Length: 292
Image (cartoon, rainbow, N blue to C red):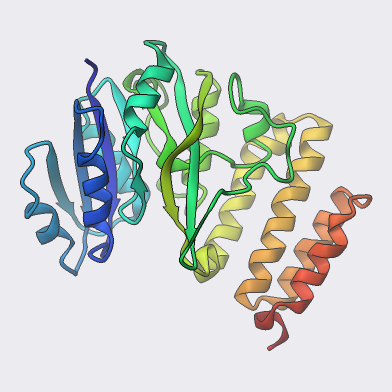
């Protein structure tokens, strides 16, 4: 039975981390180790982890450096043949690891799966491919991933061999660091998909709008690193449209009025014939944060 190393970065996660850890303990696949990377928390995070009576759960505390550095520390500590990721505010469904180990079937592949989203007290199915229904979930996903990030980190399991080849997460990137990592992994490994929910993502209201500028900057890094130099004409057009459309919405939520319109113009320029451009403009204009 192959060992799965679970990497859980945690920063002031006292309100949610126990549920996250318990969801790992409850896995029907028992052969795992969990590394909680306590990233300089100032709340009760470390004490909560140390109170759990399970030798498979280990905590490593370091100064606060950010989620990518925490994950990279976890990659160095991991001893399993497989690596899985779970943030301290999300949780897994009980058969997550068992289903993914079975789906991998001994192959050197990247594994991801469907997941649920808890938002405003309601559990929903995320519409990750709503605007890109032609995107594949399996196989060589490099060409699609350079256009749009639709892999849920909490659903991912990768072979240790992939880490040895690709290295870790880019610590200079903000929120898109996991997207960058999936793209790099996709250059050398195929993906397989578990077509049923394996985890629950806790959607925090505001999301990246709390740190809009770093995310906006790093989005351009990703596009300039992969999409624009390596994508086809169609991929560049679609990738620009969907990302600038998304950023227009985020800018509106964050109260960045002019930025919101600038992103909408970029999206419109990429694909002016798309009917949903109008609904996106109305969304941006009518957001309460935009109107203030």
